[in-house]
Structure formats: C-alpha cells, structure tokens
Length: 347
Image (cartoon, rainbow, N blue to C red; front, side):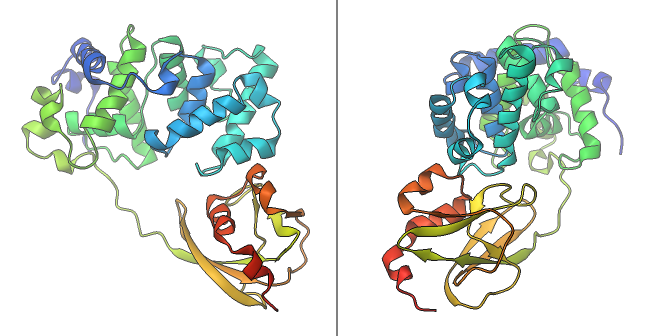
C-alpha cells in the first residue's frame, strides 16, 4: 500500500483552499438549524455526539429534545436514576452510550463543577469521549482547532485523494487522522467541522453521491478519474450469523415478570423477559427478529413457568412499563400482546 502524505495531498488542494472551500459551502448549503447547533452548549454537543454514534440525524432529533427536557444539565443527568436514563434512551440502541453519557456527566460535575473542560488532555479523561468526540466538542462547543474523523470524513477524503486506505480497518485510521489534522484550520472550526460532516452526509454520500453539487468536484481525484464508486476502500466482512434466543413469558393479571440482564453482553443491565439457553417446557407464543452489530437474533417467546435464576426479577404492571429501561424489541413485543388472551393460556 502506497501511503498518501499531506505533501501529496497538497498537490491536489492546499490546506487553506480546502478549509475556505468547505467553510464557504457550509455557510450557504450546510445544515445550520439542527437543535444542538442553536446554543453551542458543551452539554448539548456531548449529548448529540453520543446519540449520533451509529444513528441517523433524523432519528436522533426527537430523542435529543426529550432528553434535554428530562435531563437539561450535566448535574441533572449526573443525579438521575439509572433506570430513568435507560428508559429515556430506549429505542436508540447501543445502550452503553447512555451509561457513558451519565458517567461523563458525573465526571464533569465531580471534577469540573459541572462545566465541560476545553483542553484535549482533560476531555480524553471523560468516559465515552474518544478522539472523534474530543474534536467535536472542541470544534462545536468552543470553535477551537480540532481534527475530526468519522465515516463521513473518511469517505470524503478517500474519494478526494483516491486513498488506498480501508475505512473499516482500524490500523488504517491513523492515516485518515494525519490528513484530517493537516487540513484542520485555526479559525472557523465550528463551521469547518460541520461542513465536513454535511458534505459527507448530503453530497458525498455512500451511494449515488451528487458530485455535481460538490464544491470540491474540480479537484476530486475520484471524480476526475471516473471511479467515485470505487472509493472509499472497504474490507469485505463475512456475513453475520443468526442465533436463536429463547425468552420466557410469565404473565398474569398483576403484570409480567422481567429480569435484569447482566452488565456485559447484549442489552446490558436492561430489564427483559428472562432468557434461557434452550427451548423451555411451555407453549410457543410468537417470534421476533433483531439485528445486532455482530449477529442476528431469532427470538422465540414461550409462555412458561420461569426457571430459577439469581438475577433480579420484578413483576411489572402494563401501565408501569414506560418507566422501565427495556430493549426495543421486547418493549414492542409487550406493547403488541393481547394480555387478556395470553393470561388465559393453560400450561
């Protein structure tokens, strides 16, 4: 693999020209009315960035607004009950992000009196804040110089310079960061960072990019060589497997039995129908499917008496389910159940 250095990239477009082009385009055509852009509040930036990890903007917006209504400040989130936090996050998936967000709030309150620090060294110590989020906080909250690299930025750089680097291979990340740092300006960082993300999300899209609208079209190597669809380079991964899961439904007029899942594994610490390793004695009721990052779950739900367990269990009435942190497919299943009919099933 032949490395593309900042000096090589400069032969395509200089750092100053690149930054000015992105800033000018963002001012005219970028996204400037997103809810977390309105106040440039560090807490708002942190919440939005963690929610936006592996989740689309249109999905995040209503969750972001509800979150701020319930937890408007670092202090409010730091002092909140964990189940309230998980219930508010329910449906976004990747629940570790919610725990990281609360842990981050607790760190900011305990160590920085509820005020987000600006220094990179201090930001790196905050739970859930990785290199990208450090850059996003510095750029969006403080308008300070900071490189950012995410999927949008990798795709944009990959096409612009026909980079040989593989976007889904962690050992290649350092090359993208090197170029991003080279092209990061010392002024207008908020608008520049937003411009990079906007170009990737709305113009230099993964499929059917609208190159005719791109301000970098004239210098884009992939466009000039008519090979836009060949970039960025991606390593083909094996198809993810499907695994069965067996869930026990113990339901009566007083509610449904839920069990708190372990702190590791899928749906960590959420409340769910108790799961057993094999099909239990009972009557099959329904099935559901759910896709995780590393496998697909083929869920089987059984009306059955519960096997013993040392995990916490609670019987929850239907009207109280909204206050419990549940995995999205389990909540959907319980909401769609005809409880009266299921309660009449004889084992």
